[in-house]
Image (cartoon, rainbow, N blue to C red):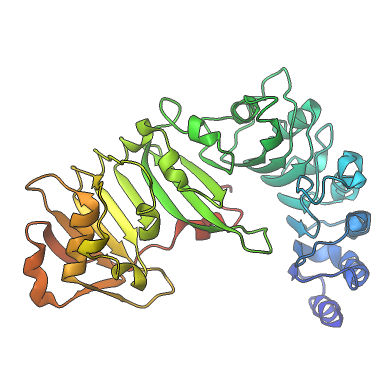
Length: 425
């Protein structure tokens, strides 16, 4: 901790951004003391610990960082404690008592505060002045009352809200017209699916759905909501997902739906069973573009028709191409009679992947059913077709083969896992 103290002293009164990681209970008191002494010139404060998280009774100690005025403080990101609705946390009395997890009253002395994430923090029964300029906020709680929900929507500048709750009550009055979210992360509410199956949809609508430009959730009920007429997506992106807050790195699937307005629906499912193919058929039949890993495309278990699909982008790894043989073809091909373009992408961390012409032919004819007399244009990004002497094999399945303009875009989950990404001034 001597290094931290020395760096802050050398900064003098200049604004500083402080990120401290791997904090343990052994050094917590010293970290809090140092930061409290320098809070007057800290602009960004981010505190993290690795698993296991700190015991919840340390929360009041951490709050003492903010006892002195913080005139420059803009961002607070504290991830030291378990999420209050996590299974291992629900037995803790201090987490059930929301009064013990309210934001520090001393944050009233931080007039520039615009982004706040304090795990595990809940919200007061009424809005407080120190939050009036906040544009991004992350909350979690066993349950939020109607008064707390009303206080949240009363924040005039709030544009990005991350909400992870076990349950909530909704006010009888609508949010004020000044409340408008650009981004909502809504996780939890699973325990209420039996007793109150409409709660998830009700909370979404109360918070502004379907006018929210970017919605992210892991709730299966989104599969029912993200369909016409409420939402009419044209683009589907699918990728592997590693849980950001899970020390075991649980793996699942994430998918993104994009409509004609550019509105986004993101769904994250851990230990997924091909979640995209559970989508309403009214969604699938209207898709014009799909970006998906090859291994996800071939794991669906039902007949799949994509009549409007014009562009299919497959992200592939080197072992995938070995499976592109006549012996590994599917019995029921994916029907995409409108397909114009098939793009083959590598992953960002990979070198160029070589594909034989015969393998490309088996990929197209063994998995896809195209319209007669309409061969696809193949675009290569981070991939290449070798043995060009065999290109005649591709007639009439392929019209042209060309290199794309630039590398493949990075998987969208990299941006999704960046945590804060709403277009908020």
